[in-house]
Length: 250
Length: 250
DNA sequence: GCGACGACATAACATAGGTTATGACAGGTG
DNA sequence: CACCTGTCATAACCTATGTTATGTCGTCGC
Image (cartoon, rainbow over all chains, first blue to last red; front, side, top):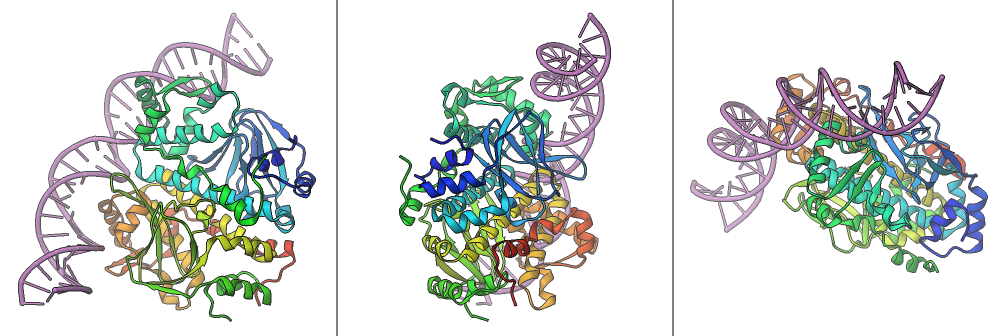
């Protein structure tokens, strides 16, 4: 087990050979720590690095002319942030830490080296990009065709599911360090209405509210509310590995 | 200039060498024609091919338990459809032709061969996936933080911009073969409200309505309404090509 | 210990957009 | 030709959600 962010990340998917590890290791820069609320990059600026999240949460968003904000995605430990900037010179969104966090930068233009050198990593990157798309698609459906209640429940469940993979301490897996403002901006709702909805869910014993975030008490109950189906989070790594003749993690 | 869908598609981005062309050619199956309204694949079924759109429009969407529908994206000639299914065994959305259309199937699992064989194509596929994400992100913003008027105008402009690339006959570039139902399901609105909004835009001389679709009359006017900025559609191919030492199209 | 700030809470009121209903028209089909 | 079916159109009415306003509480800086 390596201490590198990104190596750890990929070892989650497959067994890496020595060369893969060295490659990643040579490209990753040392982890950087950020306090909560730090702007890591801004839309319009030159896009040079992507990051892997080592600890804490981050949040990508876009600000509109009228000052309102749309949160695009939240990132939990283990996530890779900024792959979608690959196609663009200038960043298309902002990135902010939602808690204290440590992230590892990785120079964007070196991705091409990775693709050229490691068949396995190339395919895994593509897999991750496809999963990112699936998450965006689900968020789209959330915004387009669900009620506020469903939106909130669905979003909470998604984040909890994504957190599950990264979290060791079982208690922590149900705790999401989210403010109501972030939730509102992610779901296209007003904070007032998020508050109403969240209190509703709390009344029903499904969640708990605290100043340090939201805790899920009854995932099944929430699942009923939201019509949540986690399939879109479960990438099919097995087939991919078989297809390219790579081995699953030890 | 080749007659293959996908070769033509990639020659748009860069000069392909003989091997690239042979590779793509060997994988592409013969084009298939579909009449308007044909279901090409359904959510939950095994995901075997992606497609390139040779002519006509297609539309990916998800149906909800209550029968409502969320349109995820529309595809115009030159687009690649289904890359996001790369990460999953079963399809996460449905695909339907929105007009008569001809598409070229390409076996999904052979993508890995492409990645392994051609550095250029590998990078271009990744670029396309990143651009697809940018489009989803913009759609997200549209749904989350814009009024019905803005949504409609923004969406129409996006599709027109995307169409520009593929269209030869200048007149056709401003004509979108979209029904109001599709528009509504893409924007998370009701058809009634789309109709109201569209008529408003028509009153103002910005668009025209016909049974065969919508025509844009005044792109600048629409741009003002929507706050549309096409930057998210303009991938930076040049930097990528330079980075990997490939040549732009002749 | 005081002031400022950020997060949460709640109430009164306003509205964008949803729902339901109905009709007209065009194109396809038997 | 008559009948559907899909698309567009429009009106009356309704409600989920937004807006504005105000208050509380805890935390941080000094």
